[in-house]
Length: 428
Image 1: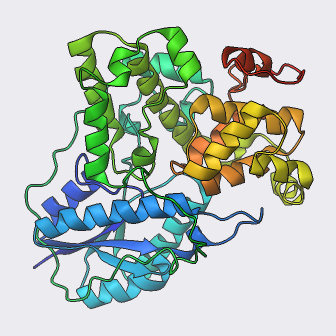
Image 2: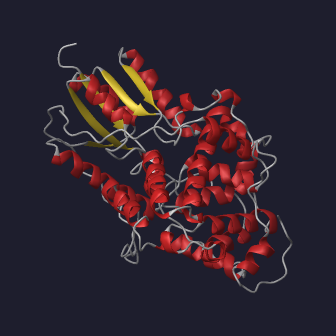
């Protein structure tokens, strides 16, 4: 085809490094049209009365897109920003720019998968191919030692077999040059107000992590400097009490960082500094991300193993004061309240904090797990559908991994954290 143009539909893959979709689009076309859709469905209210996206994650997203636009502009191009659903605008874009193919990264959660299916159906009527890429995992599915349908449901088995028999591929290099489709109007990144947020003037983004590939790579590099906290704190007790976190998850969630880039940086640090418990924790976190994504790929909604889940969800959405107090950090339990305060004011709490507040909500307050998962979906800056809903289902005892329930012993953890609390039952 003469002057073949490919539309590159960006979703949670906001980077140039290790981006197979982008590399392939450049190689297979004469020019590309990068596009990002501000889909209103991601800024609506959910059935739980929560927001689909909270203000902290929205601002992190805006920063990540500013970074991506800046990277493209340095190469003499840009990215088109569209406020609306991709299904409503892709036909017009394909026809206006004479697009031959559309490339995108396919997600695994039900809502995101449905959007891909709708777009694929639309493009089929135009005789335009939607090419799918899987670029969110450490391991490519074709490199796993088993097909998707045979992936072990037990995490420990998945981890053992994958680490033993699969390989982590090297990263794709960032493109050195890109030919862009000619265009005059590229659109603007909407303000928070234009995305539907009502700001009261008390929002404080000072000291807040900056979104985008450049900031993510900078943070990753700083973790493995010889004087970094992760390098210096090598004791298990320190790790347990401090809740030390690499805090890479927000950049990973939006695809500003590739999990393979993180993996190889950890391996490089291990070669310089030797084994380190925090390095191991980062690699374990990457494996858990893969596990939940592959579980959703394998099982879909059946991963939750809960009969009549839709009815349970609708019922759960009407929970009363106990749920509100948990959200506001007013349970009377000091450590739960502290973590919920941090979540509400920063959009982030470490993994142990997430386990604690989830265990408390489900097993002490007896509130349906989906209420907590929906609240985390709104508040977390690093929200990723598979990891969030998968972790909550595990703590509720509903995941496919019956041998490894992702719950915690509250009394033990409160003792470790040296916090005095009222007597509470143990939920190990």
